[in-house]
Length: 201
Image (cartoon, rainbow, N blue to C red):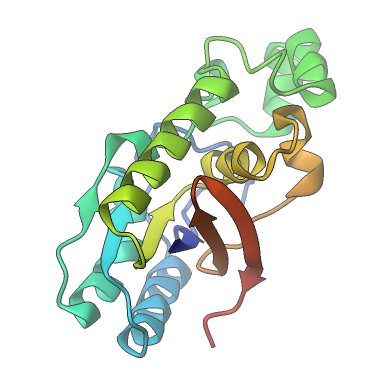
């Protein structure tokens, strides 16, 4: 049995406009930095065996205060990159509607069968994220691990692990809040969701 505390990185400068942030390395806002600091305060009172994070700076900067508080070096894993949104990266929903209205409509009806043009297939993203978590569970049986990554990637991973059809990730998990705690338990590759979007204080 291994427990994971999944955290979406802190707020970024694209949040105000609700822009899709995939592989673009978008910096944290002042609020995002405060959310990272609050995660560090929370982590200092926890027993955590490892800290994993995406290579993107918004995830690494969110993970750093927690890792420092725990005296750990973060494990940076490329499998935790956000989903590549292709032509949608950096755009708002309204801008996508102007640039590729039919593709956007198809995406909104089924974001897996019709992922954004030029982007990564969500099933591929789910597979790599789940592979990372399961590999970590096998390395740290009985452990508790903090994972700082990204909204779409984590929602897809949750669906895959919990046996929910991937195309429903936007309905079942409409949002993972920045800096909030979602706890997942893996036992013999079976998953249980313990908490969703819990505040750090």
